Length: 505
Image 1 (cartoon, rainbow, N blue to C red):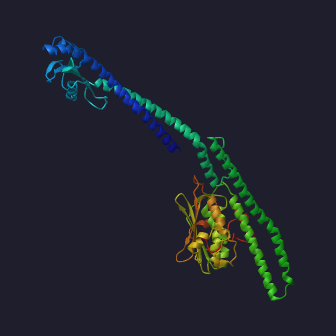
Image 2: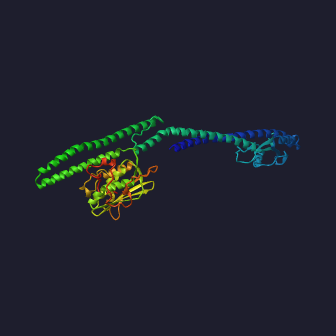
Image 3: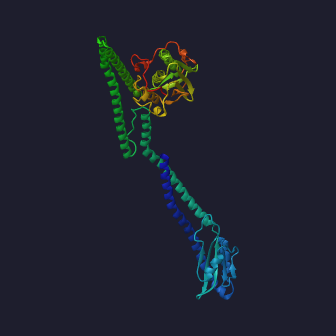
């Protein structure tokens, strides 16, 4: 925008200079030409007064001496002709020039002639003047003078160069002033743009200086800061409400579950025991929903905090942690990774929780005898992880809705889950400047892809890196390594958060 403003100022300045200097340049050229023409007309008039007796008596008299002296002094050719166009007297340098015949015609008709009107630097040719020689109202002949216009062209060129130099100085001053003015005007807009990007990337404490630029932009900056404060406050209140409500509901929910459990021994009929079992399942389901809300609230609060982790080691840890459940459901869970660290820079526990949600969905919705493969590889300037299953998959419309909060596919409404697993994954990936992709597998199933940026500088190799990250680690891997701080975000009594709907992609 600054460049466009400067160009607009410069264009306006150039138009003003053209409007002012063009008439001035024409006036200067005409003035220099008129000055020379007036001098030559005066000289021609004097020669005409001397040429009258010469034309009447047929003898040149003193006219020849005058023309020779004039030529020697000024280097200007002049000639006297009679009414029949015969040359009566002429200086040594006299030569007919373009325009002299037309000037003679005008002078022999009884009128003075001079040309051109203006001498331009790019046009050659002399200045020609002619005056009639009269005697009692009768035209006896004419005096013609041709003046070289080189001096006039040089003078006009000098004036025009001076005007051009003045214009260039004015343009330079305009450019410098325009840059300063544009910078002053646009500095609040530039800062507003930068702060907007910072807020969009998660720094909700960024604000605009509201004492820069014109008053209108100062008011805009102040209004933007007020809006950012209000939005930040609303978001904090919303997240705090979700976290507090979820946390506060756990105590009465735990007490309710204990009371429901205590009712079990007093139930004797089969229908009562069945209803008792359903009530316990619903309390467990509600506990999972509350835990997922807490996890989501924690994930959304993470701002501008990045850590470097070995994605291959984390993947090996999560595969080992989920392997017992996979074996229990007769599903082969395997890890494919290079035998080298795959570092990624993410918000804390982003890869842990994302893999927990994706593996949970993949194992949950794969049939017995199916296979879930977790792949880790380097991808460009980052690290890619992929969870592939052989479950039923999702349609194209379902893939577009999979990350919405509490969304679940119609055919799995009765399967345990809160519908927040993929939402948590999307929030963590977005906060890490990564990407979450979902697509159908071949010939069936779903593929969930994660991509995280690599750290700016390679992290040092971890000598204690989990050996399970080696390629083709099949189900039956060693016991899972100790969990990191992601464990605090997991539901009580569960290996990982329960995701939404069919396996993520």
